[in-house]
Length: 451
Image (cartoon, rainbow, N blue to C red; front, side, top):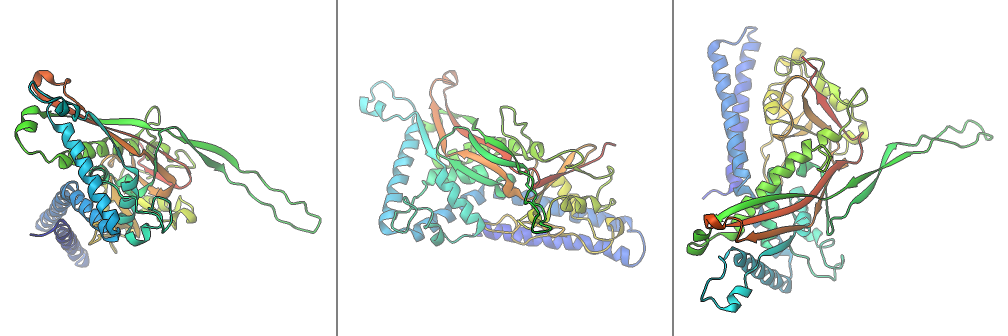
């Protein structure tokens, strides 16, 4: 049976072939200096539909099976680099946590049950996500786990024992982060406590003076410093499960927790990382990135690809200083905008010349490379606005300046009383997180003009 990796690889290959087929149809008409026929346009539309279908299928696959594969890959790597005693400890901790979670899923004790059975019922658990955060970041960046041992031991030295995340924590973290593009771009900070964190922010950099003669006094301007505060806002997911199902059937407890709670928390926090207002909620990148004459780059009109010029996206690139562009800059757009950008070319009007979108054969894989536009990585997120009048349709720049802060403990809780009248048991997960942009010169926005 083909693995998820093989399926994604094959879909990416089909996607590239469909993109090339559509380009050939348009290029044939251009080379013959004529307009495309109705039949050619219909054929081109079919290739676009095929590309979109493949992308939607791939994304749906990645949001579930790929998360399982990623969990398996991380755990296999951990067991490969762990010592025998560390592997034994991993097995013990996984078994203990799995037993604890299964205890959460048991129905409440009934008449005739022993007192010991009642006492074993667990109502809440705290799962440490700080350790899986480090391992998954390393895996997604392609870092060998053997190198990670240096920073992942209990005393940060080669003499310590490997700090190993539990299978349950790995599963939840994989689902929580799988489909959140901002998490793949931003700088992730995981803390044990949830108190406010203050970071120095440079509003204006200092400027030195030229020493013209030996008698010239050295002077200069002072930097203007501010601060950025990262808090910890609560986000939750509540699930109701039939008590009969829990009692009468075998339940994939780890799968349930990972898929339902992990994915739901990922989706709600992912929205805030993009559009959050910063008022009692995380500050989204679209909110934090600069606006006005010195910030947002307007398109100059509401017309965009494939008939509009590519100039606005080039302007967006060069609205960021060289130092930021050379530090792993990337685009973030809505998927509908990405579908239009695939048609853009480098010639006059954006309709002739070489295509500016380069599809990647490894997009979605772990590790893998995203597609590229204008030579830069480009990712899509449904929370970025699609093409419309006055809409902020793209974010570009050095994403290491955008911080996402997680409080390392995910709280899992069960209530037997909330849905008592429905014979259901309620489960909820609570995650504490925040986000903000520490350097407003690192990222910029492309905004459509008012119609």
